[in-house]
Image (cartoon, rainbow, N blue to C red; front, side, top):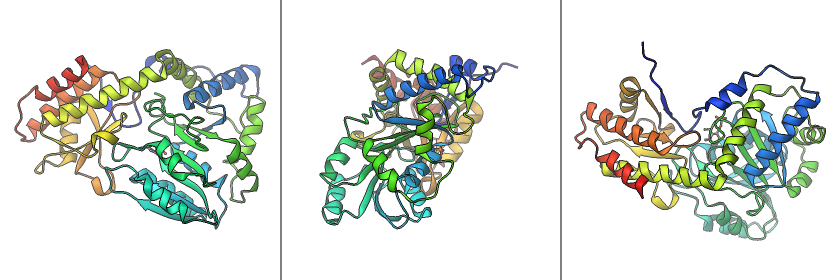
Length: 383
Ligand code: PLP
């Protein structure tokens, strides 16, 4: 039987390129030997370059959520306060993790589909005269809604407040510009399975000098997640525990791809794909969750027409056309579908995805002119 190519258009895990797949099947090496040291130093430098930082970047075997947990347990002590600006599922998750570790969480929530109103951060921090907030926590790209927050605006909104700025960049890094040093981001967390084009299983965390000072006094519980210990080992070209060797070999290849294309070029490619999918969905008469000004270059959330269930549409598109889309999370379940367009994705993949969405919509009884979405996407691509 013909084995069709699957279009895995999720906002993670994303498709893995062949060079990376090959590297994943290398034989194991001694993780306390010179070959590993060379590999680990090379990938650490490559990840730092991706973060646009001179700060220490630590690499752990874990899902992105592990990276969020390390940001809490290394810098915030039980009883201390943090301000979380949440615009969706992943902002809420960061807040939940902090609360689990005994941190007092004040959450400012914004409507799902909109970005942070930074005036609210300014207002809240201005009232915090005693400097009780130890961190401001934000999600760069909210994957559940397809909205990107403006990080320089968040930093500016904090003014001279001494709180650390912590950023969940799991679905943005590599797809959306992020300048750790220039924007003064103290702790930045990302993961392997999105724009890094790797299988899931690695998290990357950068730590500013200011944050290391805070870490020295932090009393929260950690063993596996002790970043100071990881930093000590990094100085010897090692990790405290057995590293995920295949993923690190894969990372070496994915970094070559990322920096071979160039980060700025990759940002342009991702934004173009965003514009293609948005133009196509509008041409089909579908409603988008996010406004143009805050729309994510990595993932687009689309409402199905009122009489079509989003999960039914996803079932049809997957079964008949082998295109895999993500569903809505929590209160958006069955209302939206999400098209991931990050990582190893090119504009023609978006044309194919739009073609499949059109056919699946028709199969579900939606009245449309075949090719109208595809045409709109092609027009954006041609410029
Ligand atoms: N933060 C954001 C913005 C995400 O998109 C995700 C995963 O989709 C996570 C955190 C959690 O990552 P993981 O599922 O690898 O734990």
